[in-house]
Length: 151
Image 1 (cartoon, one colour):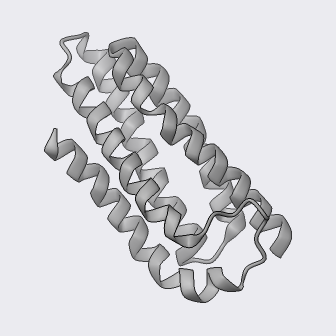
Image 2: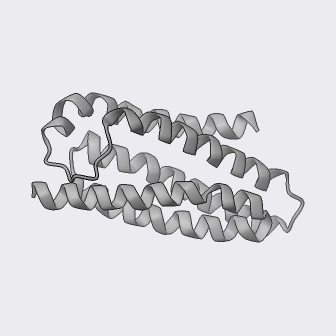
Image 3: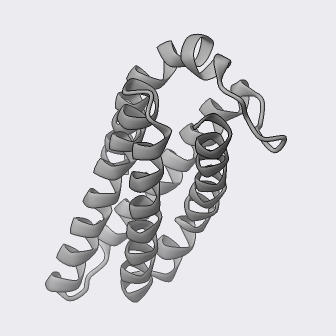
């Protein structure tokens, strides 16, 4: 389980590499919607979500099931992890709310596909990803609003 959590936290670390320097500089200058949370909220939320993702991945890994189902589940899980890190690079690293918006929409779609795939193997694993989907849905609205307010 620790291995799965560490992998997910490493993805978060990649994202924070691009995010941290942009928060006090570029991000601070953007017009933001009223529903923008304080900056300090993001780190604990993401750390928690990466832990839940790691636990969910571990539950799938340890399940005895059809190998092809597990393989598909992990491919989807891997794609959404890549999209997760890519979003941070595009939005914060390249300072592109539009590119971030495109990727976060794809990310949400792959999270849904991952949840569906996980639910077929382990109900608990699928449910553990629901907070992640909800947060990414919220982040999509935030990303969209930032794009509209700043274009």
